[in-house]
Image (tube, rainbow, N blue to C red):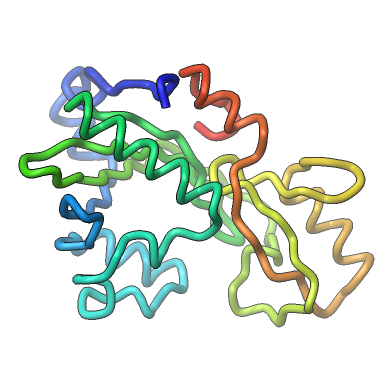
Length: 206
């Protein structure tokens, strides 16, 4: 994808103090996109977010694509891998990784390494409190309905209205079904897809 933003100096231009303060979550895949290393911070972050099944024993030796939800999201990452390996330069993907009570603004830097390996490094750049958001709570009971969520900006698709902030959709769904939230299906919304295609970073995702 020719429009991916290349990460030339993001890590180099920050001071050593800032680099030490920004949480970084890292993992590495080989040339076949098999997970071969995860760091302890990544494992702790997964556990904190309710993904207790993502232990070192359960992820190493498996394909990265076993853990990436949605065909659109897989395509986005696969295009990033192709770009990184062919150019030998990193790319950066801004995204959000929200919890029911926190908005997390993050940057994912995908680094090329020797032998076709790729290092993922996600940086937590900003957090904001938000009112409890039930649709993001994995412990809540789910209905048979499906809600499409953008993997990058965390907006949700509510037909026939369109893409709305997750909190707006959550409020509307409470009226429709107070006990159960729909299952979440991840994809990349048109706004984020266009932003990445033109090489710009979507302010909603950063």
